[in-house]
Length: 549
Image 1 (cartoon, rainbow, N blue to C red):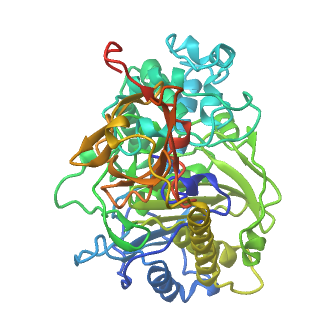
Image 2: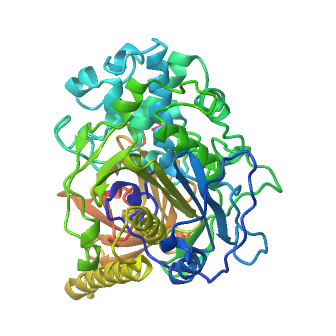
């Protein structure tokens, strides 16, 4: 849903130097399917004459089945092409019309929708959210009262990184209205407007504001007011609109951080404004050209006003600039970094960048605009490798920003991936080193069984099934796994769905009488996507008289 490496899936959206793990199979580039409706520019610059070979290396190194790329320059399309296959083991090639889940790249569409409603005088971006949604609540009354519509887009609410993502990630039975209602119990851990922390849940609130003010569903509003005038005729709001035989990529994930396999499609119906859109690079080329033209459509009309355009691209939340994980990534460290309305803002080689990434089960992507050069590049992948989309993006940027020499960003990001994997291995080795292997659980397994209730997520059930503990998140079909003793009253839950890469420690605290008082969880691996925010859960045993969650 969601900017996801995507630590693997969603975390790529939040990091200026994000990269993901690599796993999968080698594929060969496929020719593009031309689109007559798009104005085509001249040939690629000299530094991109070997671009097909570079893409083949990207696919092989990061084991991505398929990638689609579009480059626009001065209002025209320089390149729109697919490489590799839509699904491993199947012959269908990726082309410029292949649909991918673009995940958190959806956030720019949500921001545009709100600004368009503001242009029409139907809302005020600086009005309080409660003016439009009287039932809106955060866990802090002051934040509830002071939250403005613009704040919903800026990642500065005081929520922690990815707070509340388990309400819809992996897919849950909650509705968007349920998610917004449960936000009232998601803990606020930082100062309001105090610093940056990426979230998705406030885009569910933004979705509800759009629906309330416009009188349309989010999907209908975006289709009618954005897709149609921009000419994004292939784009969809979520995978429930996909039909058999359509030109659509299948997502892939490294199961157990290793072998790449297809993953089931995910429909994000309960927070579509955070990451629900499927699009092709041909459609996103049109979107990039409208953005680079300040909201002006090909027919000369404005999709959104120049004022709205400036506001979306103005920094609201500064983002601290970290140290690169390896020295070779130092040239990518920006001079400034921040977040506007649905867009990251930074710089590269003396040019302002306006960009976003997206992460989804089996898909990650990046869209990057260079306003000073009237340049845009979008990279869509059907495997969870942020390293792949970054390696492609920076090769294109270097070509147009007159880099003195070609950098092999594939090799650089490959090293970064291996460094991250080594650190993850070290983290596990440290856990193993301090583990007391002789320590047994304090209670019989039946003593840990029961229903546990978290204030914002709801019920989590631990059952004793044939002498083993099974853990189930009651509203999340995919979060079912087997618990094995680790040490003392700590267990490890390993999820049945091995594509999740989100195994976790489960710790039980006992009261004075030896009964379970509370349960806590946290991901085992530092590579786990931040949207698995187990650490924010505070489940306690449910008494028989407590009723439903």
